[in-house]
Image (cartoon, rainbow, N blue to C red; front, side, top):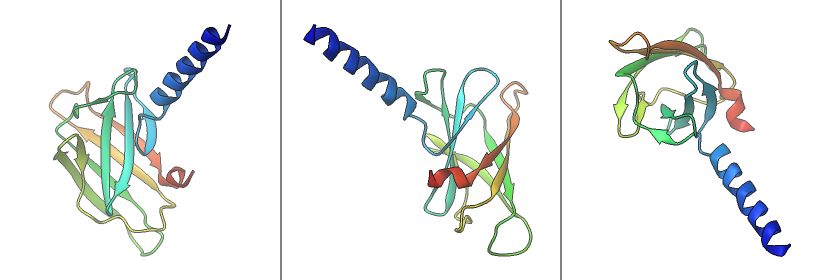
Length: 125
């Protein structure tokens, strides 16, 4: 009986580990994969995940993003390019992170492209 309880606990730990694989604000894509948008060192970092929420290489060449910051008038716009395991922007993101980021994936393959809206206030949760 104890072995069964330990086995169930291990399975729930594995399920929790899968849930926590996505870094930043999680967004599901239409093909069953996931995106994770985070702010790292003042830059946007967009990571790509498979159906099991395991990190994969970016599936697009670049992305564009814009948002209306709370600390100044007007829009901020950036281009995210491939850098290691993610698409990264220049360091232009400033707190407070209480705004939506509108992100468009750009690629030669139209199936890889798409537009998404991320609520960066979710990073504080």
